[in-house]
Image (tube, rainbow, N blue to C red; front, top):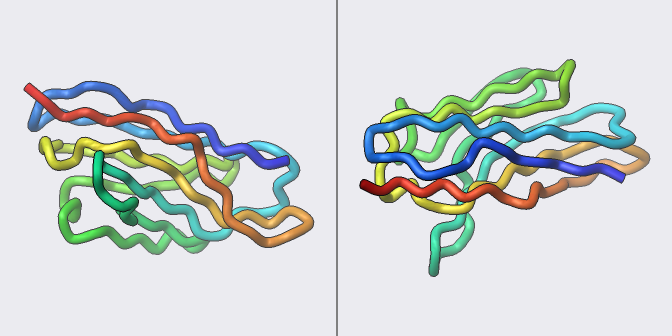
Length: 118
């Protein structure tokens, strides 16, 4: 069994910062690509940031220069540092990881709420 558990969400004022973390646990042999997604009320889930096993990163245009994704392979964690937050960043944030166990498949975390409001 593999679990992804997110933490770090909350309420923050516009211009503020939050740091999201996601920890993978279970019978993990290795972790390939790790991603953060978000889903705002009434909208489809969208990809936000990606980091490969080789630490190559990419971001949706709306967060470039404000969000930073990183990973710690020794701890099986991925982090999303979010700066200069805007009200339109309000959403439930989910981590996703492609993990090798006996199989090679993707796993989702349960989500963490981020609310940007004054």
